[in-house]
Length: 379
Image (cartoon, rainbow, N blue to C red):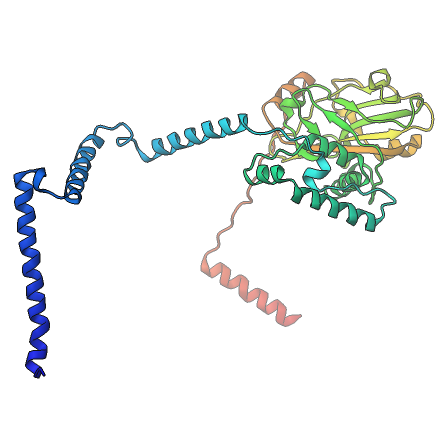
């Protein structure tokens, strides 16, 4: 049985004995290391080789080009490697030929759509998606491509697309400023594209430089005998007449969709948004004629003042019916000045002029304050 002093002393003796054993083994290991690898264990040899290799790597790293690179150069090198890997992955991707409805889940809504049948079809599409493992893998790895042109063409042909186009035109005040109407009912989709590939649909941005020539226009007519009128106009930027539009192009008596066979009343004028006036709206309006339009004199191509036009008055005069609409927005660029030079008039420029600031001394401001207080008391 130990006393209190012995109980405290015994752990201390154990620690001393343990340290002595460790020091003895350490001395033996050092002697074996000095004598050579024949007296070393396998673990000691491995540690020795690892330390030697680490020193060599540190010495060689100073002369490595990648070690001398800056952070920006390393990021560029990493991005280049990622692009190469993406290109390699793209070449090895499987090609999918799924319908647009399967890939996006979009189901067109017709005028007499049964909502129960629509939900049933949507559940069926969801089930097909879950069962297709290749499609799920492609979606997870970010190389599942959706056929957007096909989907967009199908969407525009449906009542949903025409309704959204009408709501967008109302939101941008195209309906009120061009047609003088609060609501729109559109039935014919317009496919309008400029030469450089810019489409015209729901208020997208088109630069004036890419709209220097008349775009190609296509639509599905009711019949080949039906006559149409196509108008390109803008409610913004008429510098000669307030609240009137600028007529950029118009053709009447178009048989079906053969625009080149119609009577061109106004030659094409590229968009001319003046500098400092922001974005201008340019609308294409398709109108159905009741009869052939006669007696409309062609407008001169270089007289900008005579291009003042009111679309709503023209529609009422000839009893035309609205069928299609498309519009885009354009902002000033350097090509606008060239168009004004061809017209033979100077290009107007608008700048924001700040009002003159009036500074009053404390005595004047105090007198004005007292006078206002006196007048309020009298009233």
